[in-house]
Each structure stands twice: as C-alpha cells, then as structure tokens.
Length: 476
Image 1: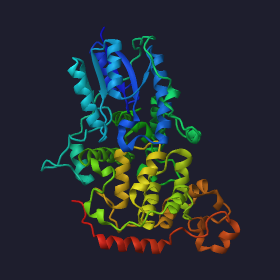
Image 2 (image 1 turned 30 degrees about the vertical axis):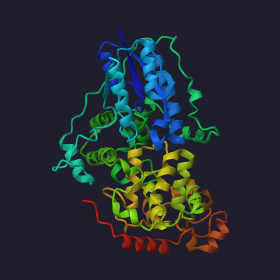
Image 3 (image 1 turned 120 degrees about the horizontal axis):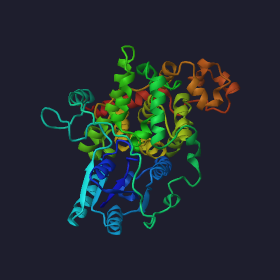
Image 4 (image 1 turned 45 degrees about the vertical axis):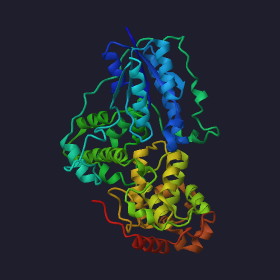
C-alpha cells in the first residue's frame, strides 16, 4: 500500500474530510501531518486566541487519530520544505490537502502543488470548508457579487450538498520512527495563560463541535430569529470557532438541522442557514477583493476623515472602560471568553468607528488577536460592514445608539450586569446609561466611569459631519 501525506490545516476533523477520504479511497496509507508555519500567513498570522484554540484542537485531533491506530505528525515550516522532506522520508506517492482561501495562502499552496508535481508526486486539493467555493458564483455579467441578497439567491439556486462521510473506524499505523515536534514546542498556548478561562466555555475539537451543534438543535433552534440578537440569552449555535478550524463541515450542520425542521421552526432554521450564507459571502468577497483586509472596498472612504489615532482611548475600548455599559460588557466578554455576541460586535464596532471615529482596522486587529473564531474573511466583512466602508455595508449615517440597543436587546440588563458587575447596585434601568443619574451612580457604582469617553450626541454629529464630507455612493 503506497503512502500518501494528508496535510491538515484548518480542517481539523476526521468526518467529512475530503483529503483524508481521497487517500483512503485511492488505496493509500494516510500519513497525517500538521505543518506549523504562521509566518506564511503574511500580516494576518493567527492571533493569540486562535493559537490557543489550535493547540487544543490539534491535541484532540491527535487523540482521535490515535484512537483509530494512527497519529498526527507535527512539523515546522516552511511548508514546502517540510512536505518535501516528509515525502522523501516516507516515499509518499501522493499529497492531499483541503483548500484555504486567504490571499497569502492561495499562491503558496499553488507553488507547493507545482513543486511536488514536478517531482512526480500526485497532488490533489479539495473543498472542505465552504458550501460554495468563492469562484463558483458570479453575477449575470460574470463578475463578483457585492450585495448579499442576490449572492444568496444565486447560491440557493445552485444548492448541492455533498454526501456525509463518517470518520473511519480504523486507520493504518504511522511508523513510530517518523519524527514529530512536540505540541508544546509550537508555543501556541499563551505564556501567561491568558486564555485559560476560555475552556470553561468551549470544548475545541471535532467532538466539541458536534456537541455544540447538538445542544443548539435540541434547545435553541426555535425562536432563533429573535433570540440571536439577545446577548442575555443562549440563542445562537456557538459553532463559529469550530467552523473556522474545520472541526465540522458546513454541509454537516445543514444536514443535521433538517430532521428537526417543522412548520413552527422552519423560518428560524432558514434564518440560521442564511447566517452560514453570510460566511460564504465573506469568502466570496475576500477571494475577489483580497486587498480589503487592509483597504476599504468602497474607495471613496480612502479620503474619510478618521480621527487621529488615540492610543489611550483605544486602550480604554479594548479593556471595557469606555463608560458605556453595553460596549464595556462586550469587550470584557471578549477578553474573558475569546468570544463576543454578534449583536454586541456590531454595537462595539459602531462605537469605535463612528462615535470614536477610529479606523476600523484598529478593531479588526484587536478582534483578530482576541477572538477564538477569528476568521479573516468574516472579520474583514464584519468590520467593513459596521464602518460603512465595504460591500453591503450599513450606511455610514446609521450610527448605533448603544443605550437604545442595550434597552432593546438586553432589556433586563442581564448581559450588562454579568460583565460589568460594578453596576449591580444600580436599579436595572440605570445600568444602561448610569451617567444620566450621576448622583445615584456616584453613590452606588463609584468604580465605574462617571461619563462615557465620548458624548453620544457629539460623537454621532461628528461622524455624520465626516460622512457628509466623504459622501460615499452606496454599493450596487
């Protein structure tokens, strides 16, 4: 039986893994390997929270492989040299991997494929991450989409789900003579154990992904359309980090949902699948507009009058000390759990880019380092959306009022109270905007800032004034 290298990246699962299945179906002896080469990701090398998750997910993948008689080899980059060395050590006849779509990794993978094939090695890559690969959908004019609704309408018209493939029961042994770097030597876990508290909330790995989906299907799917906007409730699936690291396939999620579809929850289920569609749209945009990781998709915003970078204010925003309870709650949830509720992401993003008028890249880079589900495509889309600079963006003149948002989506201040406990002594209605009752706040919540760092009305007016000078045209 000839050997085949199966190169794991952000596809850390055994079920529904096309690269692994290709090796087995082709009659090869799979040799699983992960190559650590963060420098090849360019300026968007994985952040600290992502690294911490990856450490645990790799550990889990290795355990799953060992349970089946195999194991995961760990090697250091450069990727091409590491793979070529492993091919030579194993006399591998083939190398299989699942595709990545980031601007820095696509040309790298193409070069590796060409180099290996020139040495008479069979090389194949597959889609393991998306329902629709970024180049598979186009407008009637043959160009990329910039608006979600027509993109998703076209996607639904081409909906073809792959067959589900369970994880193999057994796998061939990987020779113990093949060297492997120790997982701890990759130094993926934060030195100060900043992410230690994450694991009270998350279970990285394929089993954790399926468990999170099962909990969602059993309890939260009905009412999803309304509950997904409520940070005070568990109304979302919480599978985003599992999706990012490929611990579960998106088509597996869709297939698992279908048996639970009823007339009562059908609209909620469609709403959830539509959110998966936004992830697809993000990858579509990233592929066609790779510069948007650092540049505005709407070029008119290149001349937008952002405020001068204010490190003190940015640090207060990062640490949840803005004086706006819902914003501070979100930023503290992020720091302690590696996650932030999606509605709150929009609120804190609007506060940063509009009230503070700081460039959206400050937010994108902070989220990139602190989110366990940090995904370049989704992170870029989300920040350009909330800043009003990207595709299908919220109009720049739409400035979220954080107090109104908190009262609507956290009406009993449950979320605020959990993450900003300094406000616990205040009456519930005072917790949304404590500065409106200064005497009460000073007496019952003296540790909390007495005023927001930016006056809400003044910040909104300054943002709108800057918008009028820029006057961007809406996306078409």
